[in-house]
Structures are given as C-alpha cells and as structure tokens.
Length: 393
Length: 242
Image (cartoon, rainbow over the protein chains, first blue to last red):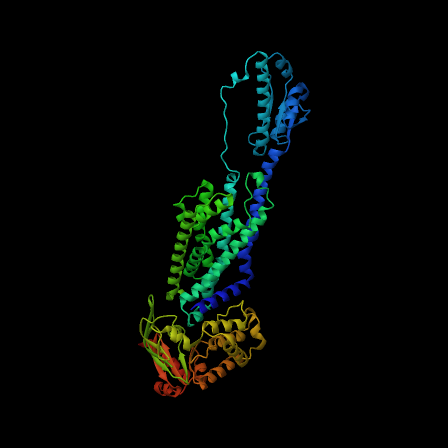
C-alpha cells in the first residue's frame, strides 16, 4: 500500500523536476517574480515618503528680500530658500507646469503692512492636483502658519495679554497605528503573493498527473496495474502538495531576502521577517496545501485535456484568492469566526505574524482544523471522481 | 486463460457490446478481429478491469474482472493502444516504474528489467529519455513494461498499428515466444492478414457481437470460403444483418 503510493510519488516528482516547463511555471512566479514586483512597488512608495520627510524643504520665493525675518524663521525650521527672479504672473505657469512644486510670493506691501500691524499678504501658489507635491506643500503651509502664530503671540505679549487667549482649544491628535500596522496593505499583498505562488507551484502537476496523463494515453495502462486508484491518486496529490509546499517556502525565503533591501522602517513598518517568522508563516500557510492540491486535482480530473484543465483551473484558483483581496482592501481584523474560512484565515494569521502582533492559539487551532477538514473533503471528492469509469475520457 | 461470457456494455446511447462470448486458452494466440468500432477495445478494457461490464462475465486466470480486479491485474500484462510512455523518464525508468507498481523491488526487479532490455535489443536506448524514441523503440519499451512481472496472460490492443516491417516481425517473434512459454495471448486487430499470420484461434466481432470463432480452418469452413479475407468480410456483414 505505502510502497505503491511512494513509487507513484517519487516518479511524479522526478518526472516533473525534469520538465523545464513545470519548473519555470512552478518556481519562477513565486521565487523571482512576486518578490521582485513587491520590492519594486514598496521601494518606490517608501522612497517617496523618505524624500518628503527627510529632505530639506526647497522653497521657491519671489521677493525674499522683503521679508528677512520670515526667511530666517523658515531657514531655522529646515527650509532652503530658493530666490526666484520671475514675475508673479509667471509663477502660476511655473507651478502648473510642475517646474516648481509651489511658489511663495511676497508682495511689495508686505513689509509696510506688517509694520503697521495690518494683516500682511503672502501668496502661496500651489497645485493640489499634483500628489507628488502634496507632502512638501503641506510642510510649507504649516511653516507659514507657525510663523503667523509666533508673530501673533509676540504682539499679544507686547500688549500684556497672554497668547493663550487666542488659543481656546488645544487639540492633541493621537495616532494609534502601531509602526507596522500602517503597512497592512503592503503586507496583505505579500500573503496574497505567497498563497498564489503556492497554488501556482502545484498547478502544472495537478494537471499533468490527471488530465495530462489521460491525454497522453498513459492513464489506461496505469489503471490496469495491481494498484488501487485511490493509491495512485494519493501518490499524485502528494507530489502536487510537495511542489506547492516547496514553492511556498522558496517564496517566503525570497521575500525575506528581498525585504532586507527595502527601507521598511521608513515606511513605519517593523522589518519583522527573520527566520523564525518565516517558519511560523510557513507553518500557518502550509495547512492550505492539501486543500489546494485536492481542489486542483479535482478540477483537473473533470476536464478532458491539458488545455481545458488550464482554463478551468485559472478561473477556479480565483476562489481562494478572492477573500484575501477583500480582506486586504477592507483591512479586516482577525476574529475567531473568520478563522473558519480557509485561505482567509491563513492570510489573517500570516499578516499578524508579519506585523509582529500576538497570535491567539485558538485562532490557529480553528484555522488548522477547518482548513484541513475542507482539504480532506476535496481530496476525498477527487478520489471518488477518479474511481469513475468516465475518468478514461 | 481468458473466459468471456455474454458481455454487454452501453455508453450513453451507444450499445458498444451486445453479446460477446469467447475463450482464450493458455499456450495459444487468440486474435480478436473486427472493424473499428466493432467492440474490440471495449472488450479488452473490461478484461483489463479499467471498465466494468453492464452484464455478463469476464474471467482472467480464474478471477472475476469485476469482483477480483486486483488479482486479475496481477496476472495480466497489457500493451495499450497508445504506448503512453512518460517522455521525461528514460526507457529503463519507465519499465522499473511499472515493475515497482507490480510490487517488485531490489535485485529481482533489476534482473527482470535487464533481461527484457537484452531480449528486446534495447541496449543503450533504455538509458535515454523516452522523448526522442522512434516508433519501434517506444513499442519495445511498452512491451517490456507490460511483461516486467512475467504475466501469465498478455493483452495487446492493436499492437502493430503504424509499425514498420522489422518492428512487426520483432513483435510476432515475441508473441510466439510468449505462447511457447505457456502464456495466454489475446490481441486485437482489424487486419485479417495480421491475425491469420499469427493466431491459433480467431474471434470475429461485429457490432458488439461475436459473429464467428474458431481456428482459421474452422472459420473458413463455417463461412464456406477458402479465403480468410473473404471470410472476414462475410462474417462482418453477417453481424450487420442481425
């Protein structure tokens, strides 16, 4: 019994390892493509945040000489004054074209009005449609506001009034996002990639061992050997499962290497992706392998040819991936009842592990039990289907 | 030893087998002859237990094909219509895979495999991947694969289709050897000359029925002709009329 399963398993693994097509499709996506795409997008995103926060704010000013104390204040607060010698009318065009993110114009009457205690006019030309400039525009506006408050406070003090009189409210904003919490979307994308590459890893085997074998005409003689069909299919599904697990592990390792080159801290994430976390994530996600292998084998057994199996499978594979997409978009938090949904529970658990959150043992238990039960159901259904005569096509 | 009694099999609207009965004895070569679609392949599939008959009985070496399919498969060697080799495995690996699934292992398996490779003149070819095999090489490996467990009963489904003359000659020689060693050999064909050149007994099927069976001489006298080809045509027509 075990001997036959082992023989089938070994042959399927050997045969598929020799097939360059299978190797490419099984491991290329997970190991190279997914981390590369991920690294590229996150690096772009984090570079922008880093640039906005840490680079000195370059502030193009027209008429800088009119407001020496304002310029001093701005320079003290990290801005680099860039005097621009263009007319005020040209400034609008310069901002619109993106030549400057924004331009501060100090009109001629500024100094005089300030002297006489009237509201001194300043003009800030901005383009709110330019999302790239949003960060630096906001910083410029805050700096100008701060300078105004400082002036107001000084004037009140001169008149013997406490500046607090004009500050009736004191709003304190508390940001509860944990450093890694902000990265939920990006990390959610990662578990999506991991599950995807796990399924892709077994995709070709699930087809090749069933629809493919039938199409090549090798199924019929195989079925006339003194081995039960369930043993044959279990051996085949084990081979599929092994490829899936290997693809998952390789993808996780590739991710952990790729993440070393991404400035995650700058994004406000903890780079929580050491060997132990990789193993823990592998542990919670590998539970999905029997379900995936059973599902793919079941679908591939229904179809009549390689091509048909590929078409069907690529549609069916969207089913386990859909809950993850929804959860990522909605920012779903793990609850005990959600743990009963395979693929979603793996996503939620893996995301928690990546964020460095505590994982509830009960959640893990529910996830493992429900996913394995669903997996057993699919494996059983695939075996049942294989016992039918129509499997010969 | 094969015993078939009143086999019936229907696929949807098509009644593939209406009434097929015959025996194939040990130490003899039995030919199952008929046009394409006459029911030859269905009969062989029921015998190799990949399909079940709707009614009737099929026995191989005293075991029922339905209730004792595992024992039947143990004593059966099947050469399928398509060779169905695994192209990424070498010829030897293909043979060993079937041997292992028959429960063989270790040195008996290696010895059996080497003997067949030697007997079939595969030589170095056996160590190449099956992907680049010629028609004849594929047939040889498929034969070795079917015989690796020394089956007492051998079933060949249209084995000579698409083979060149030397491969056909090799195959005939091997089939005669199997007979000499006491095997029961059943093979299907739609070519009269093929069957006439080789068979001790002939079973002619048409439209899911056995029309006539016996030794070549018996068939000739039963159909009142001295030409086997003419006998085949007459028998097939007789099947259509019923």
